[in-house]
Amino acid sequence: MQIILLEDIANLGYKDDVVTVKSGYGRNYLIPQKKAMIASESAKKVLKENLRQRMHKLEKIKTDAQTLAAKLEGISLTIGAKTSSTGTIFGSVSNIQISEELAKKGFDVERKLITIKDPVKEVGSYKAMIKLHKDISVEIDFVVVSE
Image (cartoon, rainbow, N blue to C red; front, side):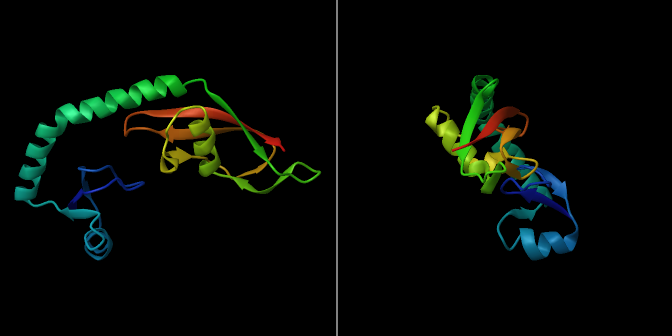
């Protein structure tokens, strides 16, 4: 079944992409949740015309993401966390703390865009991926230190 995505969905696609999914997933989850619509011929034509009209806006969004990526390139963050005597963190460091540290440095990055591969449970040096646009992502380094 072909559908048009109405919002970005992880591991499936981005807004306005035409993707093929199993019919149960489309009919029982994506369409009722207003995350997608059926990709009929008329819907595809409307989508094509809307994309043509929004192309200028989309280019501006992409260039803004590129400039932010250039500024974020090479940034290193230091995050303080409460730790035990062995260096193990009470809890873990998540994308929320990284977003807050970036905000302190003057970068407004939504926490949903930040991905950390492995859970951060110990003091040390780690990497996080920031996906600014479907074509643009930046990897930043962060160090977790004991408070």
